[in-house]
Image (cartoon, rainbow, N blue to C red):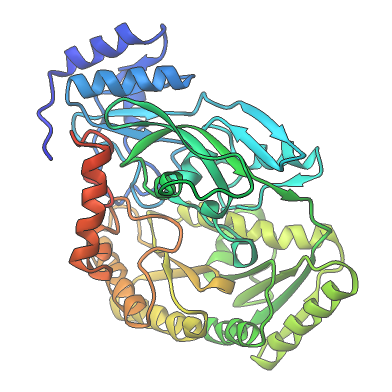
Length: 463
């Protein structure tokens, strides 16, 4: 599929004519701020316009105008993505859903919520909590990322080790497809198997199959307070052994997170939390089993921490202490960004292979002379090595990119995948081709061609 775009003035004029005043932006300084998401290492360009619709009908008008002029449309949520999926391409229009922030419905009886795509994850969780309900997917970016972006990338998070990822909570949605049609997919019922699961297909498609205008998600009852445990280790490999042992024992913590010394030092330098003075690696576990069962599960995790070589292991004394530990986990990425450009990996390996993969990542960093910090949703094998380079150091940047590719190779060699939750975007297209058979990739391209026959929806991304 190829796009022969119309002159930019014609496209912008069509958008201005189709939308209410103030929706279309073509100021160069503002456009530059929409050129890329948090994957600044991935290719990007300044878009020819940014549109910020407020309704599904306005999104449909944008897609139809771009379809008429054969202009690429790049959907964007909060811009917190880490794979370049929302990066603007040459001659594209960025469609930002940042002003579509309404929680349209909370149905406590059916345990579902209907939201516009620009609703921030934590805002939805707060609204649900007021009614004794809970929306589980909680990426580390939950204070900033939006539900539409979470759906587009099939975001995971801290509690997905027990409760699953975004796909597990999407019941239905409204989307505009590549023909400019506004359609509803999925259902509102607890069960439903009518037809192909097109709503599920949209989850994780990164805007290549349709633009999400509304999402219906299922909710769970609010949980009892969690029991939080922490273990300090001298190496990421020892911490990985604790993770593998917990899995082998059949435990299912509600979170099991790893943060290494490089991350801790960066958080301390920013927020003065004092964690790096006590540990080289922190492993954080949580149990949300009620009552005595939660205490027992927390105690089991502590025993596995100690058996794997923890220099210190204890249950958090109170909720404030527990939240401080997990706040450090969430702050790790933005804290590291203060040190220089960060290239973020997102590989997932079998949980039994976590210690081996962590060891390989350390060796790759040494071999390429690249600083690699490690954070991880360790409980489900989803590792996030963060490759840091000094500002303006191009040789270091090239070495980091080589290390990035080698990490992908090792993850695949251990039976893993090139992305656990951040998506393919631009950064992982080559990795996807290494992971999946040509026949499977052809099937995906056939789906893309059927739903976006003119190739205007986020072209060049994923497949």
